Length: 354
Image (cartoon, rainbow, N blue to C red; front, side, top):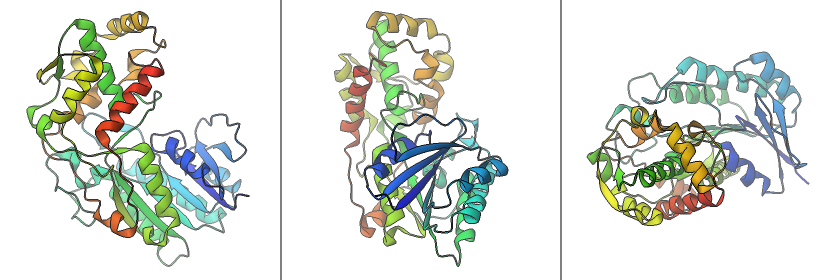
């Protein structure tokens, strides 16, 4: 019988999908998801409650229905101010965490742990060259950075309390997630489909420096396993951890494997403004969908092209040290190249990408 109650705030977001699965695989947990528009669940150990994290009254009312909450996971974020540059609303994101912690402390008398999902932008990855490999105790860059505000709130509120906190800092999060267009596999697969449709080689549409730089990413399932470990292991408490697959890659090594997967000739490095260049390609996508018998999904629901401008516009290594989490006891490893190719196959089988 479930003895722990996990509350996931932002339960329909990128980080929460696999977290729900990982927690439900542990018989001691039942899971409650909070979201503005709660989906239906047929699982008796998984329920959803409508809650707006920007509205203190709404989140108070939701948490009042979960007085037995023991673990709280914050996986939400406010609306992007500028997705292409990674600039996001500091006060809006901070207020959402503050509202949640306020409500949780008022209602959850058996609270054990609160977890915050952050990211590599903590290290200024979105601003240009970052210290590499990034370590959790690296100096902060000049603000604004909403992760700083959120973590400071959590640290301050936990001081002297019985409950503990933790924070995860994943790299580029990727998953088999057809509902999420801002996703590495979707970007790769849609670009390859366009190249094949136009009869071109598979050019790398990013910068030459990006093609040869050293990168890391984080499988969403890997992140979920790490979060579950942090929240239930004393060695994971009251600190932040970088979470990546544990393997590094270069696009110049992975790109030929992608070309082979799609049966395309390997092209050259040819930087383009994807957001602008692909803005008139919706009719082409519709033709691809019809020709390959794919699910009838509009192009902008499959892929976010300006995410490609951001991802493939980074000119330096993006690597995070995972020494801290490995020494603490979490040693899962994922082969990023193999996993991305596996997910491309899943998108094909699901008839989302050809």
